[in-house]
Image 1 (tube, rainbow, N blue to C red):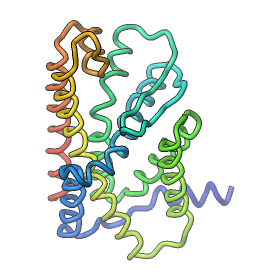
Image 2 (image 1 turned 60 degrees about the vertical axis):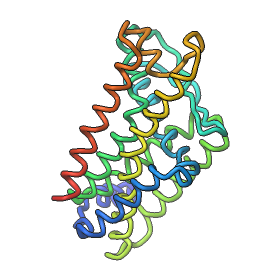
Image 3 (image 1 turned 30 degrees about the vertical axis):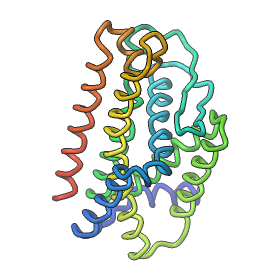
Length: 240
């Protein structure tokens, strides 16, 4: 009971966000990590982790069951699920992958700027615990344990203003990375699709095309517009 009480008290606590200069600096650094090819090469797996989280969570929310999630050495990933999903539910599951990092980035930025950064930590930990039940790859396990371990440590270690501000600045950087990671992966998807024979395309946009009879490039455009809106609102929150 004491543990639960401590957790709910921690979850309800609010903190002043870091100064605008620190927030903007962290956001830009995170965005640059997603832009530069050298840093992107080593961090793309993080974007894939959140991409697959979008598929997994939408699978559960549409009443289906996630069988397993795999993150591969080439930083690609796959979510395997079972269930009796109709065309609309399948479309929702296929759609939710590419925008998921941007959605997470927007949520993170909103939480930090409104003083509810603890919500981000709690949600991340909850998702990671769920992932621990379905992960089937070493890379996925490594990221999952990292999130669970760091989140648990932050929840239960004694806090001070310096630690709280440092975590908020880190979350601003993470938000910047995730918000730029989504459109970058969508642009990469379009390039790969144009180089791949039509009969062997198995991307999310191709799945949406088969389900809706709309061109795959249309869905890639919708992905980009959706992410662009989230980036706009996140920048608005950042500059408040």
